Length: 447
Image (cartoon, rainbow, N blue to C red; front, side, top):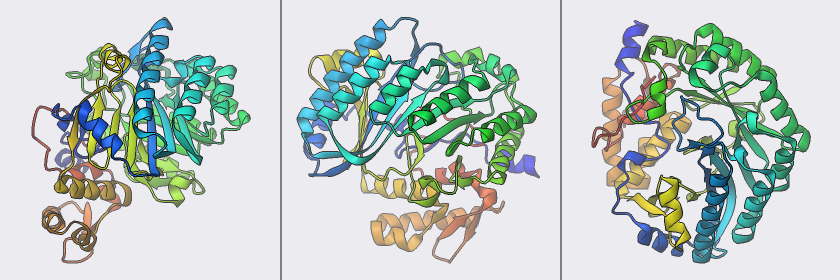
């Protein structure tokens, strides 16, 4: 029965870190549109800032991020010049209108930066943008590139949250994904950040990796629990070798099948909840006293977050921004991105202007992912005719459910996702995606 259940709901679907999703961004949204949208920002707009560092010292074969390996620092230094030009252009357009309440550095590996460049970048950002005194400032780090001077630089730059990549501690799995990272290296990096005053630590884990077994994953989760992170993200590996060239280094035969992936995800989740973590949405876990477990949660490109800002400014190659009018995305190639911003312009190459239908469907999908519910009265009150159409969609979801993934709470279309349905949240969300199946986008399996 479980095999049949998994087969019915394992069709490839998006991760829904945005709606519409990035494959449906179009080139008709250009730099001129982004410039207009920036200049129209209302005064004192709560804003998130995302900074992308697309470099690593060594490429991990499982990675789906926009990054490239470099053994030399020169390309990184040149890239920082381009980042400086982009932020100067955007800062000149918005002045002090935006109030930065969250900042996140991702990659790649932001910890590839030297300590001096970490300080220069944070200083430049704080001079050119107006940061809220209580802003959350987070960075993704590779423990293998962390040094004491870098930790001190992050602390001096005002960072108060760190996300540490682990994936899996098994030597066998690490060899299969080209990421050799010992437990001691990870523990020492986390201890270093905590000793320096950064109290909030997230650890990223991945299931469904090549040569990963239930026993190996259990051992990894047990070790992670001893590190007592405040948050844990448990992602399913997205194997897309047709689109991501370096994933072709991973043999299909080494990958667990959908039933094994399902077992891995469930076992890891149970271990974490047994250890006292609260399960958040689809794949995040938090200590009971962490703000992710106690406050309002949202879904964005970093996964689950307490960031409630509706405006996002993305800096760097491939970065995505979100404004009231829609999404914008920068050129992905570093050279093209640098050419555009160093000439004094913006690097926008595509995006999506929101329709009322987009806003309504995006709200439904995010609410499902964060709160595991659909409220027909709320949707109708907020979106009118679009909300009524979605309520009809919801009735069809409830009526067609034969596996107990959702439970109706009234006859108006309102429903809640069951614990059984939680693992298939993305597939449930896909029922409300008007763009799914259009174009040639490829997605990861739904389990």
